[in-house]
Amino acid sequence: MPLLRSAFIALSHNRPLRRFCEHSRLGARLNSRFIAGMTPDDALRVAESLNRQGIAVTLDSLGESVTSETEARRAADVYHKLLDSIAARGLNANISVKLTQMGLTQMGPTQMGLDQSAQLAESTAGNLAEHARAAGNFLRIDMEDSRLTGITLGIVRRIHARAATRGAGGVVIQACLYRSQADVEQLLADGIRIRLCKGAYKEPPEVAYPRKADVDQSFLKLSQKLLLSPIYHGLATHDEAIIEATKAYAASRGIGREHFEFQMLYGVRRDLQRNLVRDGYKVRVYVPFGTEWYPYFMRRLAERPANVLFLARNFFRA
Image (cartoon, rainbow, N blue to C red):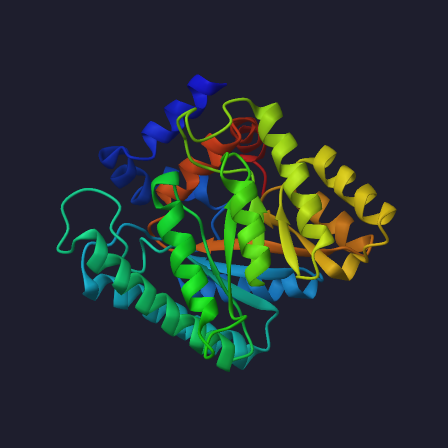
């Protein structure tokens, strides 16, 4: 499994394969199960459909690692328009962004240094958080690989500390990282909402648990800490054993189902999503869209190689 995971992570950086997949009929056939479409209107139609099923949504315009301020502003503009469309249509939906899409430099040649790019990312994300708050909405800042964890959390905390954006933004924490317990404790002390996930990036053993069992244990431990806090959080998992353990823990502590939500990916375990809603749990589905879907798609396969079998089983289904 570790070898398969590493292979998919490597493939996510393969530019020739990316070009082929993002511009071929085969690629379109592969991504249609997990990507809502190429345009914002495609994603908004999916959001409306999910809302009718009692499922909330977070919208993600796919793209990352921009190399100029112009690209970052253009990416942010998509989200500003999404916030307006969500309000106009009365959708139960918020937005998720990556800071490398907002201007943060990760690697490779760019027009900006790290400090300058971090300032740009904080400015563009902060403007989105201000817009989200004015619209009665919410901005989730996604977590990327561990090299950017500290920078990302610093930006999130500064945005939260501003009067104009307090409470309008949250962040993702990856249970696979050793540092996550300390990060969760700091974020809770600051009053910041968290989406907890296992982690989708290949990390070295110096910073992350290499064994799935340890990641699962970390997720359970951190989820219990989140459930006990007075803040509304999201638990992102398709693992039925973890979901059942979470439900049992919440019930044993008298924690109401309205106090938290389960989060899942578009196209994955639709049956489980519907069952949770039927049983009175809050569910939010992460709905990605856009032409730059290939890296996201490959990380989903790397995150849980069993998704390869899932994809194969469902490839010929409607």
